[in-house]
Structures are given as C-alpha cells and as structure tokens.
Length: 315
Ligand SMILES: Cc1cc2nc3c(=O)[nH]c(=O)nc-3n(C[C@H](O)[C@H](O)[C@H](O)COP(=O)(O)OP(=O)(O)OC[C@H]3O[C@@H](n4cnc5c(N)ncnc54)[C@H](O)[C@@H]3O)c2cc1C
Image (cartoon, rainbow, N blue to C red; front, top):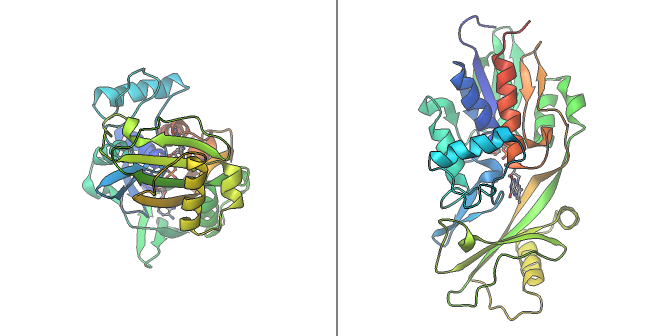
C-alpha cells in the first residue's frame, strides 16, 4: 500500500459508483472509475430512438431517508432535478441527465474510463491490477470497489478468490423486461396509469418534466415473475406481447416504434441489509442498491457510506 494519497479503482459508473467516487474525491482520494457502457448511468440510463430519448430504467427519484432527501434538494438547487411536490424528483429532459452531471463533477476528465469492461482482478505486491476484456492491464490501485450488480460482482470476485463472495451470495436480483413504443401524434392521450398484472408500471414519458413531445412515448415494465418466465424470449416477441397486454380491449394503432430491453439484474428481490461489504485486509469492497434495497436511493446511500468508511484511517 502507498503512504501517499490512496488511489481507488471503482468498477461501475451507476449511481452507487458515482456516489462513492465523488465522496472519496471530496476527501482528497484519487479515483478511477471503469464503466463497460458508452456512458455513465447504469439503470438510470436513457436510450436514443427516433430523435428522442426513452428512460428505460429508473423513472423518478424519491427518498425515505433524510440524508437522500437532502441530497435530492441539493441537486434540485443545482438545477439537475425538478420536483413539484418535493416527493418525486426528475432530471429535466431525461434520467441520464443526472448521472452525466455527476460524472462531469469528477475532479479530472480521465477519472471515468467508459467502454472498459473489467474481467479480472489480481492482487500483486504493488497493489491491485485490473484486466479489461481487451486484455489491457490497469493499476496498481490501493483499493478496488465493485459497484456492479451482485451476480456480476460474484463472477469478478471468483477471479481473485475473495472471501466477500460468501456474504454477497445472500443478495438476489431478478430480470426485468421493459417495452418502449411510440404512438402517432394526434391520438387521444391515455394518462400514465396503474397497470394490470403482469405489467408493473406504464409511464407516458410525455408527462414527465421537460419531456413534452409531439409523439406519445411510452415505457411499460413487466413484473419480476413474468420477466423471469420470459427471460430468454427474443426482444421483438417480448415487445409485441407486452404491447398487446397494454393495448388490450382498446383500439390502438400500430406503434411507429416498438422495442424491448431486458435488465438482466434489474430489481433486488433480497437485499444484504448492510450498507456495503468491505475487506480491509485485502482492500476490496462492494457497494450497490442490492446492499440496502431496490431503489436508486439505496444505490446512492451504499456508495456514499462505503466512501465514508474508506476515508477513515484503518485501525
Ligand atoms: C426497470 C427499472 C425501473 C426502476 N425504477 C426505479 C424508480 O422509479 N425509482 C427508483 O428509485 N429506482 C428505480 N429502479 C432501481 C434503480 O434504477 C437502481 O436501484 C439503481 O439505478 C442501481 O444503481 P447501481 O449503481 O447500484 O447499479 P447500476 O445502475 O446497475 O450500475 C452498475 C454499472 O456497472 C457497470 N458494469 C457492470 N459490470 C461491469 C464491468 N465488469 N466492468 C465495468 N462496468 C461494469 C454497468 O454498465 C452499470 O453502469 C428501477 C430499476 C429498473 C431496472
């Protein structure tokens, strides 16, 4: 371990990884975030289609804890979120706006390395070394944090034989299918409504702040039971089935766009009930929503609380 400023590698730039990175940087630590996707956000990300965007994961942010409520209000003051009732918070325009803003707040532009999927962790005398899927090595790091879904984290822990794997096996996350579609302009607009099983939530994106559009854009989520049962169906078939369930008993024209996305580890069905996992001996840690629950709040709190623990001097 280096006696100078500790250098942390964080794998995963979802809300948990970003929250951990920003807190550590605020405490004077060096941080490098690795993200396999083209941009940050994870399950807060949005997809571009037909010159518009679709929020495919998280639809709004809310807080049960005072800590996260205060954080939401800070982001609101910065103009990164809006809210009419101080209960439901939305980034203006699209969900990924928030995580883009958070990523841009990182101290140095090279603190976030996107399109870098980490596939192996190795501990050497000079620290931790990470290998990406192109065979490139990154390191050495004093500390490595996995801020990725539990099943993906387990696979990475196996590459270095960490004892954290035993505790992590208690967390369960399930697949979620989401269909998104566009209806032609000029139709009678159905409002965002409470759906019938197996649809868990149907959101008219046009209803969200800053998302007015001349076309009706919908995102509909299947519940975990349906998603698990249809996990291996091709996306086109899932999109059609979910659309027909949504449109049942109503005359609805053929959508201009109809697609589906599967979040393989979408929702936590069993949380660890502890804010993070940390092995001080090896310098390996885990954070993510699955530590505390199934909401964005849990991801942010987990990353933040881990960063606080990592900033404390080791006894
Ligand atoms: C359909 C759906 C709807 C939801 N709706 C809501 C809602 O309305 N309100 C709410 O509060 N919450 C909602 N949630 C939950 C919320 O989105 C999550 O709790 C939160 O985004 C999880 O953040 P995270 O950082 O823990 O994980 P993630 O967002 O999954 O971030 C993990 C990141 O790690 C990256 N990654 C994975 N493996 C690697 C690797 N090997 N190398 C590099 N990078 C890697 C991934 O690409 C990803 O960016 C919803 C979730 C889903 C799926």
